[in-house]
Image (cartoon, rainbow, N blue to C red):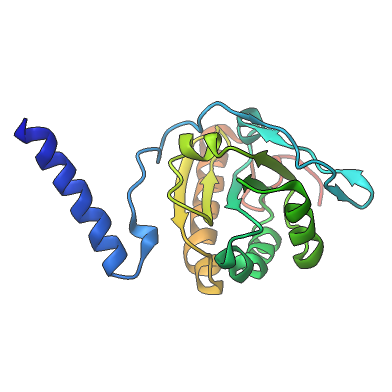
Length: 199
């Protein structure tokens, strides 16, 4: 009886420490190094980019040999608005496909948000009930994950992304994952292009 209480106490102290130090990105994740949970999300209804429907995405899309980024966001999330320009920057400088997991949102509000701030996403999945986010271990929005080419979660960032985090945190993680993939399997170059691809 005391063992479960002791484990709970340790976990609670870790959470409290992360919150008190002002760095929620230190919150633990049991999914680091593991495959993304199996899921398939439909697109946000009516969402279009350049006149074409923006697709939803699934776990299979995150295991195609390229490092990718998954951002959990919602139109009602104030911090999501604050980080959005940095997400656009991250997608641009990294060259990694950025997937949007739209959390417990109304389609009209999600479309309005992306229409106003721009969309850095290659696909946006609608997680209307938040079930997929729960499987990913999401504490709250926004959260951002880096996934390697094999579909394994290699980094979790809790809270909004800052400009400093793009260069200091995300780019080294993405470049390291690409270099590892290139060394082990020759699947992706450091520039994010398949081996043998033209410029």
